[in-house]
Amino acid sequence: MSDQNDQNAAKLIEALVPKLTEALLPQITEHVEAQIGGVVKKSDELLDKLVKQNESNETFQSAAEKALADLADKAGKPAPKFGGNDVVLSREDARDPAKYRQAKADAESRGVKVVFEGRD
Image (cartoon, rainbow, N blue to C red):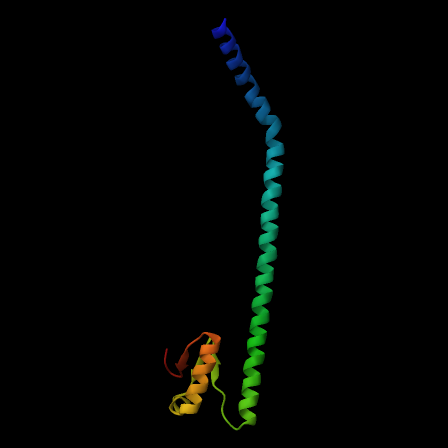
């Protein structure tokens, strides 16, 4: 009798699995899509925040470079030029110890390097 019960249980399971799958699949799909939608939404929010932060940093850097140029102009000294992230010095300015020290200090404070015009 035990074998007969096992066979009947196996047939019942075999008959029910497709029907259960068919009934549960839409609910599972909806749940997974909701989860993925939340991840996509959060990713979009974080990407937007990163883009805005980058724009803000670029605006601040541009304003800082302009302020430095204005101060140097008022002092009658040329300000080091900034190219990309690096501090760029002309060969003439690099030969001036005070200008070189200032450019080096600026570069160190920003975590970049000093490069010379005309060099890659």
